[in-house]
Length: 90
Length: 400
Image 1 (cartoon, each protein chain N blue to C red):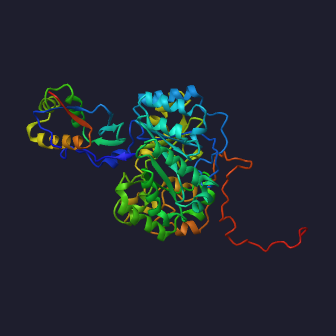
Image 2: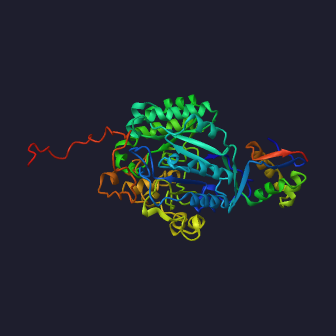
Image 3: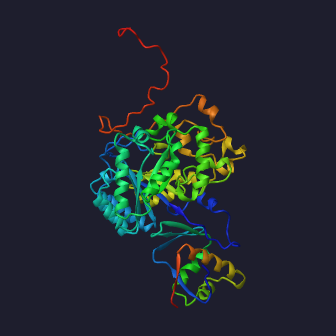
């Protein structure tokens, strides 16, 4: 599922993040799926999604520069596919 | 545990995730909690040598305090087992308490107590998963291991769960010499009840040590199992049980590493913390949840766990081409068969354990045994007991 910079997203209600050295574990209590966020920056982005107006703001807030944006949007797309993040109204 | 794909951003990934896991996590991702040693059955391969309740088992209040600690540590869910956990009078109360405190529960049961009423209640509770044990796709194969009537009880429990609308509960099978040929039948039974099939490895732990030689899959059966898992891997759970089979070639789905003390641990009914569910022995005892600092301190600082998280030497296995795939196999399987921990797994698919198994070895025996010591209704009658030839002629004269 594509995640666009101008859209608004958030961590799904049923998902909890647990910080770890490498990034974080994400657990979905509904699907009982465990996922791994492999970098602290990605964890920071995901945590910011809910309070940021747009995905782009969350990326900027976490210090993701222009060259890395595509990679992060792709990673967010993978999280969206797994239902770990959900789109919300802006 | 269901593992979803890992999410990285390519350029910033630091090493493989498995390497991170080998150094340990801040809290386990797969925590087994045996709630009681009491059991209404006497399965021949019981990992925890269960049967009788231990008088020192954690009280209801202590169990709740432990759940509070799991919540603080963000242990997302626990695998509750035993013994038969539903035998504990406060089992359902503890289940509700865990769920209310954001600790999901998957519990293992022989099914005897999963009535239609209980099944309805379970189906209505989020965050609860049930795992029904079945070790034969026919009563003939199952009941020899688990006891008379246990096949019917397991199927009845699964029917109750299905009829109550419970989705994707688990049907868990310990793979033995006698049921490897039934894998397709197991899958059909699970499908029939809307359950997910889970296959696990027979370990020589607990009473399993006494039957392992007779029940563990033969080499050609291991190969058949591997091929079956490669063909059906995405529909079957294994709890990462069979990573020793990765030496055949392709890794199986899962982490493919020994998680003992790194991502996995076991809390037993008296609060002892062991490195993994297959290692209830003083050698793998890290501490007790009643110790100062509780479970959190044991998990983070126990010297045993520090040792398990430090770089391991492959010993005799290092020179093997498959070492990167199987990592020397299962620590508990080696220990309880009397093999060196830094050598090959007793079921090494390259056959590298054959000499050691044939040679002199001392099995360590169990350090805890809660087996029933009287007659048990339903008790299994192993048919393999007299299969070995007697070592001497029988005495014809009773006075000789």
